[in-house]
Length: 108
Image 1 (spheres, rainbow, N blue to C red):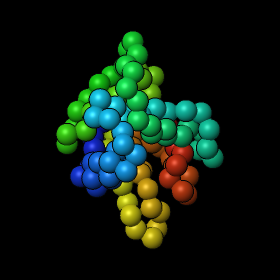
Image 2 (cartoon, rainbow, N blue to C red):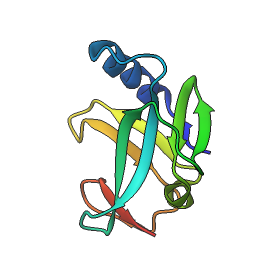
Image 3 (cartoon, rainbow, N blue to C red):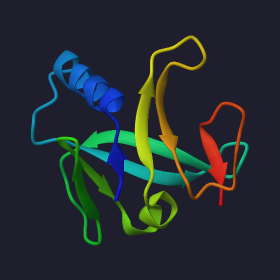
């Protein structure tokens, strides 16, 4: 399961409204190679499911993850911070053994 914090839900709704993104688009979360710790998170709107996608709905937000990424993201919570110490979406990933200082990449 991928969890969606209330802060992320609100920001997703704001972004969807500001960008005129249709309701049939969902949040796609994936893990890609890169970053100073080896793996980075990727977050997009998408409306095309692929074979082996894992589909979740939490807090009223549909989240889709490819199977390979899901192995890294199991029980991760998507959050949003608007504070001075790093505004933006971030992932609270219990599977990460280390993260970089900016929190945008991780290792397992």
